[in-house]
Amino acid sequence: VSIGARAHIEANVVIRTQTIIGERVQIQSGTVIGTDAFYFKKSGGKHTKWTSGGRVVIGDDVYIGANCTINRGVSGDTVIGRGTKIDCLVQIGHGVEIGEHCLIAAQVGISGKTVIGDRCTIYGQTGIAPSLKIGDDVMIHPKSGVGEDLPGNKRYFGAPAMEIRAKLREIAALKKLPDLLRKLK
Image (cartoon, rainbow, N blue to C red; front, side, top):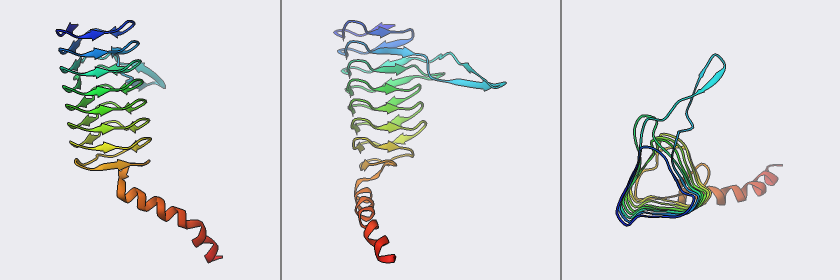
């Protein structure tokens, strides 16, 4: 474990092996960093846990709220870019790469091997599926479900997440559906 200068780590934070924490990082109580990935191999009808061999690398000036969990990579690193701010109760899966200066709100879950660009904002209760690529300057609105890559410089919303204007048109069309069905009868 390596902890940079002027890092502030509160009580009951667990920092496991192969974790590198940059300078001026703030970590709130109850956060666990460097846990093994939720990664199992099925063989003979049983699930066997794989031990994670990667690291967690946290850049300078990162803020991590209370009760977050950050898995280390299975073979590569889990990376949180410089200046990123993470709210309470966020789960970051194995091998995730989060760019610089991102904002991630409470109750976001980011599945393993997802890559998030720089300056992204992810609002609360958003779930992101594994192995996706999210471009730079993306905003994902609350309670979204991301199941495919999201190109940069756009805003997304919904489950499944879509560009916000397309999603709002979809919602407006769905509201008209009961009247259309009545007219068909």
